[in-house]
Amino acid sequence: MAIERVGVCGKRAAVFIFFISLVVMAGSSLALGQVAPKWEVFGGYAYRNVDSTSFGFVNRSNLNGFDAEATYNIKPSWGVTADVGGQYGSQMVVYNFLIGPQYALRRDKSKFFVHGLFGKAQDRVDITTSLRNHFESVGKAIVAGGGYDRDLTPRFTFRIQADFLDTDTFGTTQKDLRVSTGLVFHFGQIGRRPKL
Image (cartoon, rainbow, N blue to C red; front, side, top):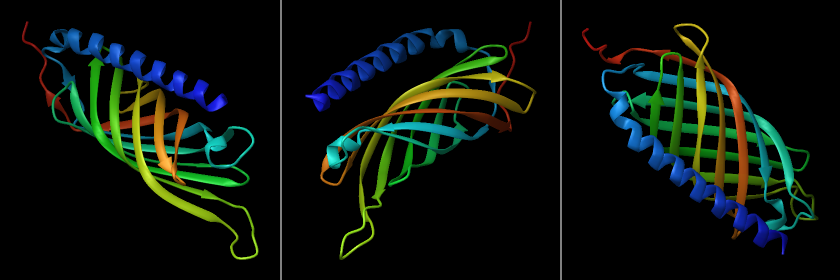
């Protein structure tokens, strides 16, 4: 029963992110004449709520760790993001290796963005048996999420983002939530300011 509720929450989150994406894309005509960094490199803290009940735990697990991303902006509004994250608990370690498109709506000192990422998930559970001291599984990962950046200086930005992760490890599907915050370093420039 608890797994079904998580599935419904996950579907609602995916529908919400889809509609937000549509609204953001509809506003893309406002992005004319934008200037954006060529590269954005993010690193920071990540909290993750893992659907560990799907592979034998009694409750969902709360993990802490890191999230790192590099985004190459093709246009001021569109980029390609690579994401690597690791979260750790007392009996569990999860890693993700992801890549995918990102759409950004930029304003003077801020940016809203959404992304869809695809790749691999690697989970490790530290349970000792007579034959092994841990179990490990690798599977696919699909992520939908987004966030907000606020400029601190010309080169550094504060970021907060939330992602819904749909992963397949240990022969089952997990529906997780990850919240990350940290700093973005950006360099290079694409686009040009409109002439007045």
